[in-house]
Image (cartoon, rainbow, N blue to C red; front, side):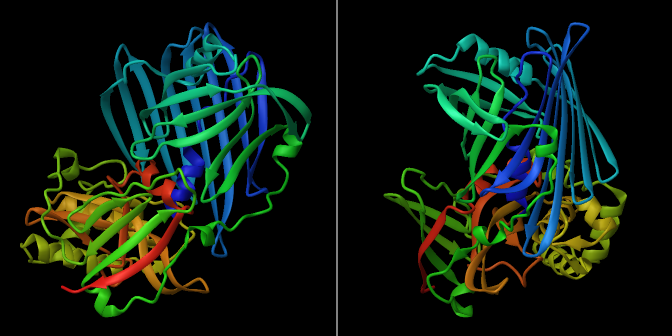
Length: 475
């Protein structure tokens, strides 16, 4: 569920695109209910264009409020050349800061999370643009109906780039809180890895966005331009958690979950095919619009890619070299030296260490969990993965669905979930500290390095999966 909230917060394409001077306010609606506020400002300062964006959201999650905010500032030349950016994101008290400065084709990045600061240099993606550059690309392409153009948009909050393909439609009359305007619709496809995200923006001749809509969990997230009073009016609240649950066609038995299960999955809407990862525990076969997904409790080496160097290294969310995590890892494994035994010990340790099982944590890094042991499945997953890396093992974090006989008043459902995997004995094996352990009731939607911005593939699935069949296979 956490990844869904992050997608809402950070996967929005750049809205700042107005000709100067401009200060825009937006009300944010989910399924017609107000859940937040967005502000977009653009200023020209001494030959540089500074774009500032701030998004504040409040969502209800099974009766618990989750607050989130994102503030980004990008600096470019007036002709759209990127110079630098700063991104600050906060989720229920957890703060992440990324600051980037360009020197030629090199990005110098400083990131801070959980009280730790990391500095690194990265190659700037060739041709990548920040908000002003994206706006100018649209201005150059024009708004003639049928116009199609592409731009590589750099996302400061995730420090990577995604290609945007835009197609212009015929002008439409759009109802806004401030009145009706004649605007050009622009269909946009953001090519996030494994899960393209489609949005629709309505713009004027200066590429100023007045409305933006995107699908989220089978409903529509909409941003509407209005005045400040309208944008900052009280939120109405929206509990989106129930929409992410997937009904099981039948009750699953402990014997079946302890062995191998085969699931038949299909998209709820035609024309939107599902894509799931093929792992050492999960094999995927396409049959028309359906996927036959076979999940084994015990991993079998199936030729899945071996870990690379990054799978062993610390990052902003898995701070495995932190002295605090090193101390916890030693405490967890004691004298154990066998990798499999170590990971089972870590799994058991984390299950007991996180005493406060809370839905209210926005998204915490492993170091934050070590200092304040609370949270739900994502906090368990990142801590297990980080401790595994501290022990010298390659690990990753999986987002997916897990079977629950009962949850939040619902019976026989699959719930959004996260767990960890480690490379042991030549295959990726799963460890789930939030539940009693990994079993065949886990369906993987995406895998990543613990960084929440990497999980668009899994997020795209939530709210649009139908589970048609579930059968236990004989060993």
